Length: 82
Image (tube, rainbow, N blue to C red; front, top):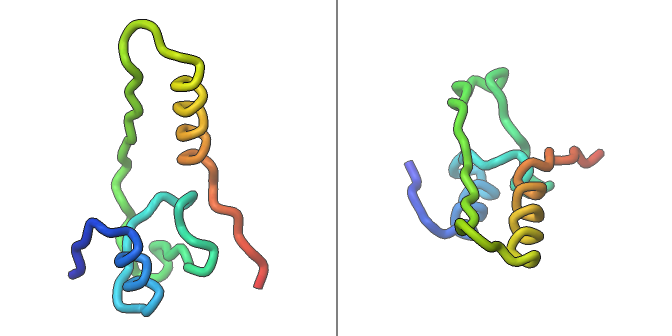
């Protein structure tokens, strides 16, 4: 088991085949594989990510940032041909 709050350390550990991790598909670096139940891993539970904006007036910049974050998290990972 490897527990760390540093994404760079986690990525390095996964790249050296010392660990697997659970990331959103849209955040997996192109040089890493996404494993599935066919490789013997359990199916992950459904989860949600919440993005909260302040109540009341929200600036156009905050709305645009929220839109950008939402789109980035929802974007599927594009496979790269080897």
